[in-house]
Length: 350
Image (cartoon, rainbow, N blue to C red; front, top):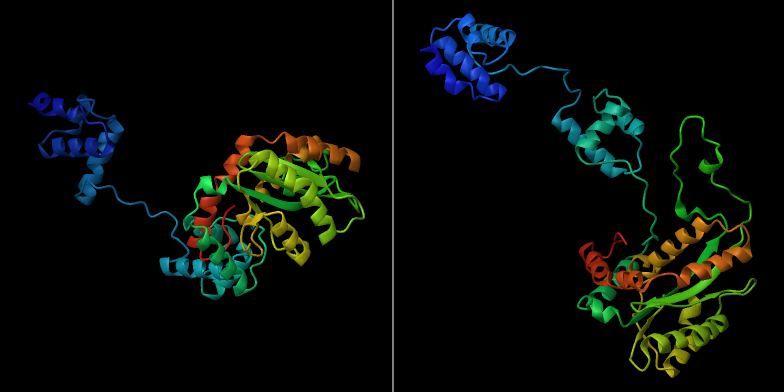
């Protein structure tokens, strides 16, 4: 009789099912020794299940108490509100403020509670300050105007901008991985100089690839005379090379030398169509900003040691940028526009 009952139970694989099978046999009058003979579970496990059943009258496992939480769900929600009110507050500062609300917890506990809500400490992203309602309004006007444009439409645009390159510029990197005792190892130290040489460049690109790149001579101001000369010698040859007789659109931001009347007139005389009006403080809408970041990382890897070498590396790495990369950046424009609209004019991830 025992074998008839037990054979189907031998297929039990989970602890919960095994416990139920053992208790079922026990209720049917089988002794612990009889159940052990079935080899359904180790002897100690079988006797423990039977003992617990006799004491509690249930096959359910008593939930372990463990260490009680120091905070209730309501107090956890309070901590979340405190953090969202001041995103830069440290866990130690939050612990002090939480303590004023009656919760005595360490900074480590604070971090665990915030982690449960997906709030993790990260380096703040650097974006231009949108200090005026006009900035946000202009961004929304621009994005609504071009919201229907496809990647093919953006492929007819030449984006342009100026950018600085510094010797020993580290491209924003501030973290290294090192072992104990390696803090001042050469590979873990960021070299700095008091007055690093800075080189300013102007460049442009489109979905067809990078265009001209020119380096601003030392002691030369970025004024309307310099800009008109740059457009004459760099932009026009690029448009001719990339688009020929096909109509294209030129993008530049609202820098003073870009908005000068003489520049506006010159562009009109050259039949250059302008994209815009371009919203201020909007580098996230200009894919050339991503191109500058890529270029700076590549330049920094070459570790130029003087101004001449820096210029040489900049030009070399610029022409090495592939057309595929340029096209990929241009094709991100519809997503940029959509994200700014979704965020009601605020900065997007780009």
